[in-house]
Image 1: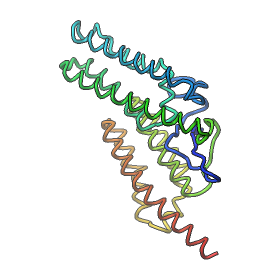
Image 2: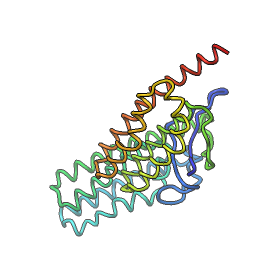
Image 3: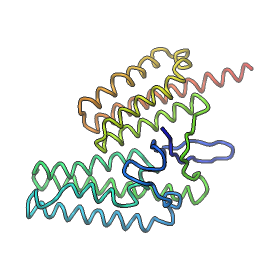
Image 4: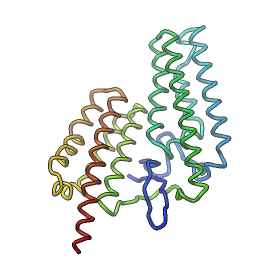
Length: 271
């Protein structure tokens, strides 16, 4: 599996940001990424227009549902319109957590219509989707500023292996964000594959080092990878439930990172 990631550059230090995406090759979950992601600033007006267009389309679908009913609304188009715009991959490659939320809320609107929910409930789902889309546009604008200042490297499409335990832990946190994103896209098998690969290719490489510092924490995280998170994915838990499991794991990973960094500092002080 390849990783596509933006990196902050600060002097000689390169800090992997939350702007990370786990993909295979140069494609997103739903198609080619496109060169526009390496010129975010030049496409901000386009992205804003696309968000307006999408919201207008969704509003039209909801309006049709209100006055003509569920069949006439064609709720599947909510997702189809989202996948058709470049902004889809702009946010997918800049901020995975809000990308996952957008998917969750797209399906929230679609499912409310499919289930013939009261219009007030559908409108509530629509409002939450709108909020997420504007939040996403703000995230892309921020990424564009970093990109303009040279603080973001060009999007990378080759395998980037962490070189230290702390880098591995950061990478694991980003991969767990992608688990939530894939699950929100209603791709549970893809989410489970990421969990398996992340444990096998990332966590196992630093597990022994972590055991030496805090065996209980290492055991707890191993259980999360093998039991807690897979069970949440298998039982058709809500996206919020899966996200909560991931957030709890990320908090443990942050603790693990702190322990390993302290151990590394002590080792350097000695030698």
